[in-house]
Amino acid sequence: MSHKIVSKRQLGEEVFWARIEAPLIARARKPGQFIILSINNDYSERIPLTIAGADAAEGMIELIWQKVGKTTAELADLREGQSIANISGPLGTPTHIDNFGTCVCVGGGIGAAPLLPIATALKAAGNTVLTILGFRSKDRLILETEFAAISDELIVTSDDGSYGRKALVTEPLKELCERDPKPAQAFVIGPTVMMKFCCEATRQYAVPTQVSLNTIMVDGTGMCGGCRVEIDGKPKFVCVDGPEFDGHLVNFDLMMKRMNAYKKQEQAARAAYEKHRCKIGLDE
Ligand code: FAD
Ligand code: FES
Ligand code: MG
Image 1 (spheres, helix red, strand yellow):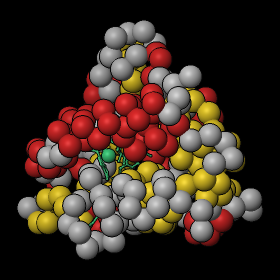
Image 2: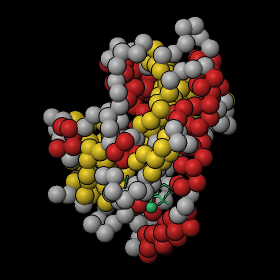
Image 3: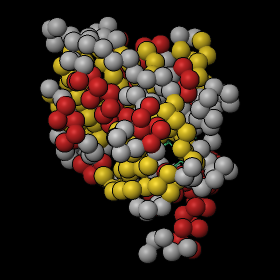
């Protein structure tokens, strides 16, 4: 069954949003879960994307993605009315949502997209939600209005000071952890290095921290081993055991090494796609 893109727009520099027909997934999905899609057929690359939102009654899911390589660029080039050949899901273990008290939600860059359904569910469960969103610069800012609507407090930072506070997210995170009482839980999603440093910060204050890991995935069912990570010294598969884990137990250095394993091939695939894109006139 193919999945029609019913609407699509650009949210920021290289960031896209789409509403897509997927009635079974829309009905079954829970916050924290993701899908794996292949754009054209069974031989296309499979990539995981978080279900950023869903409308069960209308049978629609929402995806938000950043153009970083060949497949995310190809997805960004699809137009409203066109279809995605395969979408599998919902995959992964849903986020454990509870009334923890005060939760800090930290989103870095495109990490704001997978964080939104979690923060929304935490708010609905009665938590006080303190959100920190960090971006490289103003043109990368996404979902500020959506987070403002569900957060008791929202702090936006940018690396270059072009919007909000000029800081890395770890700075306000430490300040929130120093409050009395300190937050009961932190949820952090973003680039691996950012999650690593956020976890080092929350560890100092003994604030339990959930991270959502974005390893390379292929099958998404625990069979290929592509998404293997080390948690508390033991091997785990992000697709079935995660994507969320206790951030204080993750071996981030090993994860970063594994994620960079195919850089050369990824760059070659993107270059070949850009050349093809130019030839078929998508640039016009
Ligand atoms: P490539 O040039 O092929 O790769 C760029 C980088 O992306 C690689 O260096 C690697 O780190 C990573 N990557 C490459 N192939 C894969 C793969 N098959 N699976 C996972 N990562 C890969 N991104 C979003 O923009 N929005 C989301 O909501 C989102 N949710 C995710 C949820 C999960 C559970 C996971 C594991 C990843 C998620 N990602 C999300 C990351 C997204 O899957 C990658 O950016 C995408 O696969 C890159 O594909 P590409 O061909 O465009 O780039
Ligand atoms: Fe293959 Fe997780 S994606 S084991
Ligand atoms: Mg790729």
